[in-house]
Image (cartoon, rainbow, N blue to C red; front, top):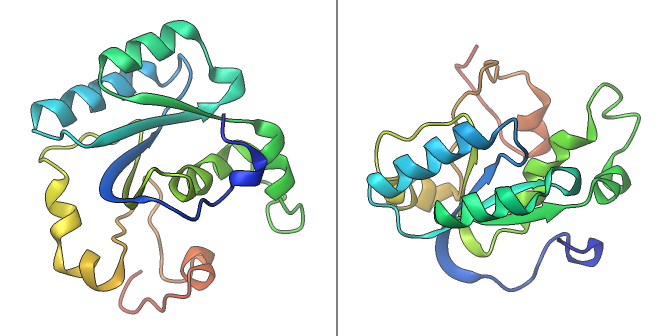
Length: 164
């Protein structure tokens, strides 16, 4: 489990890793398909699957280990400490797992994936992408479009133009 004193580590390996939010039985099938595709496409780097403590199960750990990933647990109580009710009134704490998972990745270069993301190429090339090297981040839309007026861009200090 990631202790609350380690919300953002100071030292990381200078390599690439993939972090997938997909703990629990609900997301296990799609997580395993994603992991299988990653290996089939040639990904050999560090891969973590992150979930809540309530999703931890010895069977899940074993299945993910066989698929080439480590299961990392984040305690929901830690998420509640980070939740500011006036900002996230309608947001469940579970959504905060994503930024905490990235912040606690074992490497300095991280590809975050949801359990329902399905790679069609080896993601190694994303880390070599010119935009990633220049800005340290790449974004693409989720199921809901990331309109230019969404607060995430302001929070992260980006100005987005031409996107609707």
